[in-house]
Image (cartoon, rainbow, N blue to C red; front, top):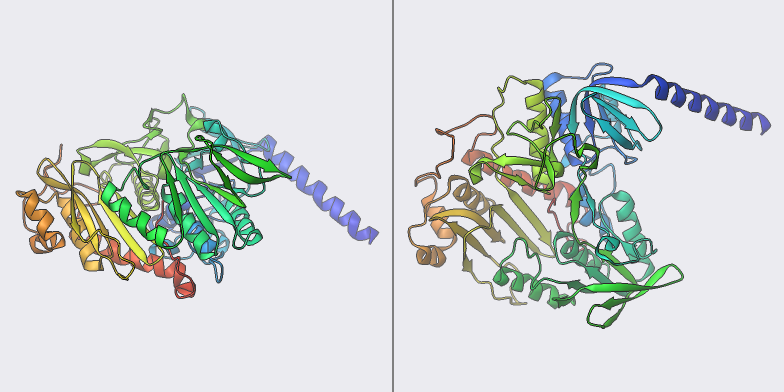
Length: 515
């Protein structure tokens, strides 16, 4: 026993010496991906496909998490289900795009160094170095910033309770494990969900599946206020209500009462007190840009990049949640998207651009794409919710309807700018995506309202395409194509199946969105 203890002490001492040597010497890589989320996994796969296996010192991923990159959207879906929930390694990237499953072994096999549980505390863009919390200096030739976003805490809005045992956020596996423990500790109890956006709505559905009573509190006039119209929101709120969920709108939680380390009551700003066995907070996120403030140009909460995903310094690319880039569909207007589809596509585009810096890849041509599944519902949105919303289909909720189908087009300057569809088929989703991509002309809004899906299905590829500033048709890189969106529609469907096949019929709360 003493010999074993001495060996353990010796091993720890040798490891400390190695860490000290690394801190003093540092390491150098040609390419460094900073961040270990969805974008990092897709960037790594794109690198291998274009370059082959990495050589020693060529490619490194630095991540604060303890596991290799995974499909983060699975956390608010399968991971929270009461039975047969998704667990790693089943949802490592890039299974979310029906692609390879990138386990830690995959990175090792392809020569990519994973620096897990490693926090970078400062960055020197001019010197091309990163400093870790252990004191090690990592130098690079090209940096891909994929730092993602962080959840906003209650304390940032004057609230309290984030450290309580039963107050949960959801951004990573550690958060998801805490949420699962909280749910299991209060079967049949009361959950307060703070926030009516993506996380709030998806977690509420998971809580219902775990037979927990749910109250959703948010200050807006309806759920999903950044995307849904009032009519669309009313349908989903009525649906959730039929599942036992209570909505309290136009107010907020002012404080949480805590006893023995746990929240017992949520107090609203109007004085109402709600009993709480657990609290889930989904009040938004902020891009992780702090390391680069004052060193790179910023815009709209993110790092400003061009169509190649290249930042204001020629050695730095930014992708995913942290990147603000020009969107051709919006006439080159810079936007930032916190969505898994954007993380995947911008990561791949940045790697292609970094490996072919001559500009051969062209500028990214991104079609904004959001989707979700809750309970037995499934919707997709493409484009921009700008202009006049033209609804179609039956938006009236009926408990007897098992397969509702409805949606909306947003018409801006006589053309389709955005489209939302609940309950569509792959062909119908393909059709609305194509209508948005080409900016289908709408000569008669009333006709569009009457015909709904029939309008875009009939129009097909006909009609004048939306003119784009600085383009003569085509464009480089991710070229607009009807076929591509057919592939996207199929891929999204397969994504859902890939993450949920083993529990598809076990629970009423299957969701796949990727925000």
